[in-house]
Amino acid sequence: MSIALAMVASPQAHELRARGCGALRDAHGLPWVQCLALDDSGRWLTPDEGEAALACDDFRHPYAHAIHRGKPVRLGLGDARSRLDHPDFQGHVSTLPGHLQLEVRPLRAVDGAREWLGVLAFAASETTLGELHDDPGFAHFETLLCHLWARHSRHLDERRQRARLSDSLSKLNDGARRESLSRKLADDILGESATIVSLRQQIVRAAETSLAVLVQGETGSGKDLVAHALHRLSARAGGPFVALNCAAIPETLLESELFGHARGAFSGADKARTGLLGEADGGTLFLDEIGDMPLALQAKLLRVLESGRYRALGESEERRSDLRLVAATHQPLREHIRDGRFRADLFYRLSQFPLTLSALSERREDIAMLAEAFVADFCRREGRDDMGITPAALRLLRERDYPGNVRELKNLIDYACAMTPLGDDIEALHFMPPPAIANQAASAPARMDTAESATSISDLRQALRDYEAWLIRERLSRFDGNRSLAAQSLGLPKRTLAHKCQQLELDAK
Image (cartoon, rainbow, N blue to C red):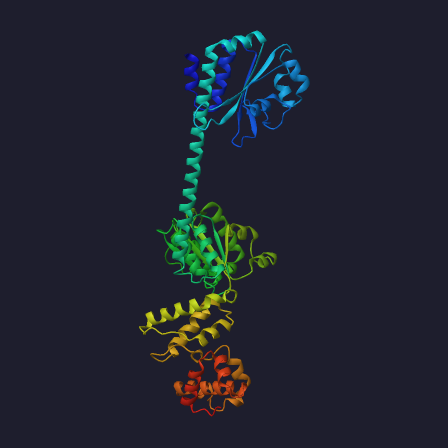
C-alpha cells in the first residue's frame, strides 16, 4: 500500500518510473531495474537517467525486440553480451554478473487506445524471476504503473495541447490586432502598393517596442506622418509628442532648444527654458533632418539615449528624461559617416528599428488614390462642392516625375483644384503648366500663336481656352486630322473631342 501511495503521489511521469523501479528493486532484491520511455514519435526509447536514446528499430539491443514482439523477452546476460552489441545497452549491463537473467517487458496503457508507453527491464537470478512471476503483487504493480503512467501521458498531452492552443490564439489575436491597427493607419498613410502595406505593418511592429526608430526617405515622402503614427500607436500615446527640425534651427541655438538653459546661461537668456528633451518626458521626441545636427551635439544626444540623463546649459545638476526617440532624414547617413560628418555610434543607436519610405516614383499605383484624397481634402477645407478628376488628368499625374514626392503631388492637386471652375472636374489643362506637356509647349512656341505670354495674361479662362485649342490642334496635326487617335492620345472620348472642336471653332477633318 505504501508503494502504491508513493507512486500515486508522483507529480510527474519520470518520478513515477523512478519510484516504481526503486520499489521493485527493494521489494524483490533485484540488482538492476530500468524503465525506458517511448517518445512521442514512437521511434526512440529514453532512459530516465539522461542517457542516450535507443532507436526502436535497432535490434542490437533487447528493448527493440520486446517492443516489436509486443511480449516479454528473457535471455541470459552472458548470451546477451555475446549476441547484442549495442554499446549503450552493453553499458547498461556491463557491471552485472553473467549468470543473471535479463527480462524486458513492454508496457502499454490498459485502457483507451492502449498506446505503447515504454519498457520495464530488470535482471535477477532465474529463481528470483520465477518467484516474481508467481507473486500476484507484481501483476498489480505492473498494472498500476501502466495506469498511472498513461494518466501522466494524457495529462501531459492535454497540457501541451492547451499550450499550443493558447499560443495559437495569442498569435491569432496579435495578428488580428496588428492587422486592425494597420488598416487604421491607412487613413493617414495612404496607398495600397506592396511597399506602403509593408510600411504600415512595420510601423505597428515598431510601435509595440521602445526602440529608437530611424525613418529614412526622400524629401516630401511623409516621414512626419510616420513619426506621428508611431507615437499614436505606442504605449506613450498619452504623453507629449515633441518635434524639432534640426535643419530649421541655427546651430548656435539648437543645443539650447534641445537641452534647455538656465537663466543667464548666455546673452539673451533672460529666463530659464526646459528644452525639448524635458518637454518630451514620458512621450516621443521627433528629430527631423537629424543629418544636419552638428557633431558636437551628436555626442551629447548619444549620451542622452544611453543614460536618459542630460544637463541644461548653465546648470550643474543633471536632469532625467524618459522618452522615445524617432529620428528622420533624407540624407545618406552612411556616406556622412565615411566623410566624418555623422557619428557611427549615434547612427547605430538611432537605427534600432529602421524604416525606409519609398519615393512616389517607385509606387505610381498609389498616385490615383492620393490624388482623389487630396481633392476631397481641398473641397472640405475650402468649402467647395465635390469635384472629380478626369482619366486624362490622372494619366498625366502618373507619368510625371515627383522630386518632391507626396508633398509635391498635394501642392499640385491644390493648385489644380483652385484652377478648376465650379461644377467642373479637374482636367489636364488645369495643372498650369501641365507637367507632361510643358516641354512640348516650350519647344514649339511658334506654333502656339493663340497663347499670350505668362506675364501678359489678364484673362485666365481665355488663356486656358487658348492653350486647350493649341493642344488639340497640335494633336490633330500629329495624327493627320484623325480625331479617334487624337482623342485616344488625350484620354478623351471621340465625341468629347468633337464637341470641344466645335466649341473652340477648330478647323479639323
